[in-house]
Picture 1: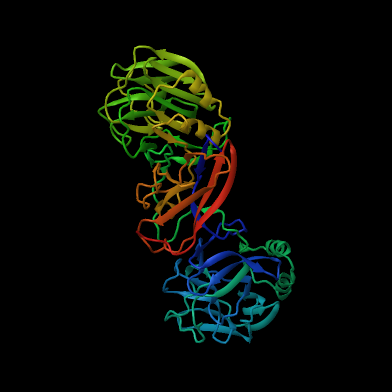
Picture 2: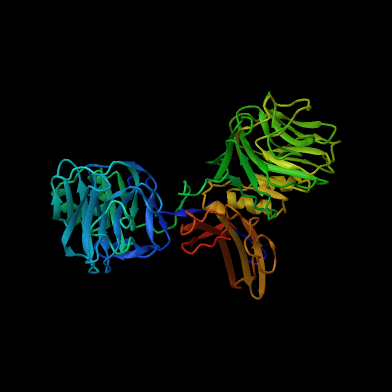
Length: 591
């Protein structure tokens, strides 16, 4: 690695979850003491383990008065306590108004299947045998008009009520490993000693019908995870959580009790000038054809663009580079002296597609323009570099110089905000009919120098996003937005990160860049996602220690504390990559 640039990045951030493999998207979000990869000997597989005091899982989708259903699953415990499956009107593990359709383990180790039709009309079915034996056991609970209410253990019917055919009428969420039986209503007669289950779980499935005794026996008889999964699918499960996840996939959906943040776009040059979305900006669009990766897209409507969160000093020389794709006229990007899509008092350094499809760059108070002879509103990806400096105003497309304006050697003097997908073009002679951009953008960078032909050619010849990022960062940009962001997770928006390296006796703060050890994470440090950061590689065979510090830095604590936050890290050097996973499972810190 000696003498080269290595980089550390994260394409996104999310909350660990247990997948609903039925395809219906009812993810189970783990809180606090839940871990992945516990042994599941019965199916020669893995399971989720819960600690019995804080660990539980909450489903993502609300169900309105589920009846005529079956729930099956495997459990292993040595502790006579806790809820295997619960249903209540609240998504989070809090006191509830309504709860029933619960399966728990009582103080004698017996299973209790409890339903109700009101706060006082309750029905509990209790097994005659205890199952807190440290062995894997299989349960099935069902209620409906076909068989009534039934409790099965290890394929055999152990308790039933043919007259119990309905449950409490309300909309609610499933809880796995926790239940609200200890609330005052309904008045359950055989409550568990603790609401939290302690042990391991595997293969939870919800079926929209009452399964027969034969079908339940068949499920119990499956001997491998693969055959069990296949049988669950064949029986028509509408939700299925195998609990064999490895905890390496980030969930970016809405989190209970947490407001979804406004999308931000990471700036990765070390100047922390984050891009801020307004209106409708789509992340995760397909990136440039020759690079791959992803991009952002904007709809070309007023108020939908990205603006910088802080100003950039007026540079003596200037270059902007990036990839764009469009099929119509509009402003690709540009500078002015106000943050949002509104009327400024100073504006220049503007890049747009005119009404004939030509690419136009304008800079300076004289409002002189460099215009391409070719047209680029053809729906294809193109790489553009627009600059001014000693060589005048220059416009490059796909690595070639296509237009110049020799008299423009400086821009208008003001502290600029940069915009992606918008530029204010009033007063320019060949202005577009739309100040907003309808198209896609990727890998946008700003430089306080005028790039040379060889530097432009080098950027254009990159073959993948990591390669492009490395070449841009080697030119010391004043701002760089790869635009490879993923949808912001509410939890990730609250995570702040620092990254530092130790090579020999030298400690360097890589993110944010600086000498010595990193300061405590703060609201200015890599909020939302861990951005790409470059570091000089040490001498061959020298050990490198990378330290990542994370804190959750914003209220509300409810719904955030206990979430398992995942940062997928990617390290690359000379286009070679290797990955690591970093999770933040418990004990989050609210600053």
